Image 1: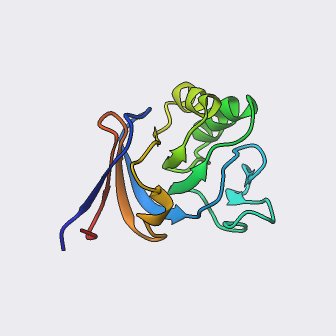
Image 2: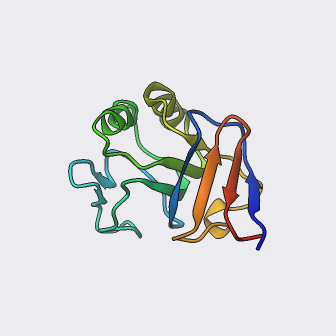
Image 3: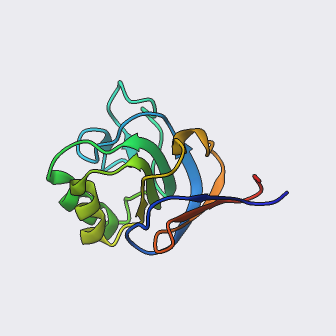
Amino acid sequence: MADLVIKGHAGIGPRASGEALVAHDNFSARYDLDRVKGVFSRPTHKLYGESFLQKVLVLNIAKGGVATAWMLHTMKQRNMAPSALLLNWANPIIAQGAAFADFPLIDRFKNDITHQIETGDLVEVDPLSGTVTVRGRG
């Protein structure tokens, strides 16, 4: 089976790969995550209780404020971060946080990214080219 290549806007950070964790829900590093246990902790989030460690998170829109920048940086330094973040739309604050943390982020896909990738898919993220490759799904 061929691979599926999805094009987004050129992103931030290094190449990354991992298993996808997908939900059509918004994302805040501050309010949605237990950054000590490595799980989604907001009870109303669609991924509540799911581990985000070493996962490529595929979500709708970034939300939240300036705390996201230092949270992503701290999470990455402590090896408690996702592998990468794919969003339909990233706000300037999460983009700043990804740049500060050297964290892989791509957004602005032609179609809703949460409908193109499924939880469990193996994906490779190349922020420089703005591409996401879903292995064995073409």
